[in-house]
Length: 212
Image (cartoon, rainbow, N blue to C red; front, side):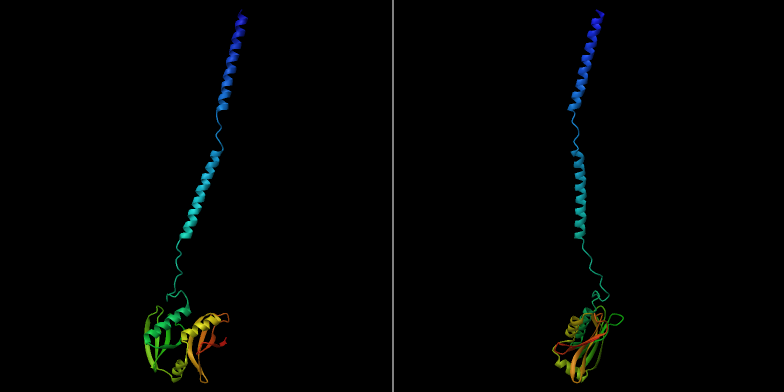
């Protein structure tokens, strides 16, 4: 009798244990595994943020206003020929005549320009800032007067023609005469041919000779 009860009790315990284990297995099977997509999404988010930061940085660089090149004391960004031509305009306006000679730029950045006014020659000194520093009157040579009367281009135009022909920058220019023939003589520096290149331009705008 005792053996029978013991056997029944053991069977009941075994059944209960089996049911308990089965329940645990079922709960484990029903518990979902966290998807790996979440980590991937996190990576994507980080990537997205990084991309946005890069885009912002690029936009900032593209939108940055670049400061202009620093100008030289004369305000012409180092364009010596341009400075000279501007100085000629200032001198002609000051004297009320036609320029026929410009000397090398001085150490202080100024230019000395001779302007023909009727039978007078007015030397106008133009500072590096484009203002008139001083003027000085003198007599105009008859040869210079005759050459200017025959000219169909100005000294400034002759300078531009010479620079276009050989490059470089202006050193000086003046009205010259040889055997009764007048021409513009333009001296240039920094050309492909070297420095101190002289270009002769006719009074009608033709390049006559290049001497290097």
